[in-house]
Image (cartoon, rainbow, N blue to C red; front, side, top):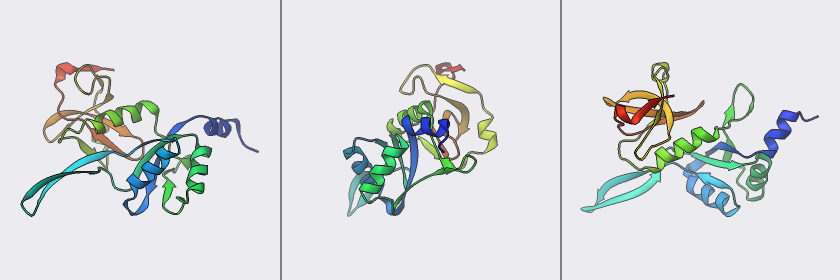
Length: 183
């Protein structure tokens, strides 16, 4: 028998983090979008020189990670029907033994920071307890207006960190103190 809570989770759309093997993030994103599923892959810019020519290339900021917003049953059906089950899997919450779910507000803020494409945005793969102990704030103005997170110091500058629970975090570029309000 299926619980009422599980039935509700199957009816509502959530952001699911997906592990994608062999760096196929962009291929999976294109397939999911073609099926009408909202999808996000955080991107960064790699610059370099090849044969004396400077180039800039968009690459995934986090290897083997893709986010999909859908109902779980719909996502399961699409992954199965498109033959993606062998290289796409959910990231599981070890406590609930269910696929991890990223809250809408956290994902919205994460997307805003990631899409800003500032060169000094930092992805933190291990969030220490000292970083989490900062003051909870909201950005009042600028490109990150409305983003809520925790004040941290990275590379000697004040930033706002948005954490995706049980995974990693992203920190904005420098934000002046007068652009922050305590939540």
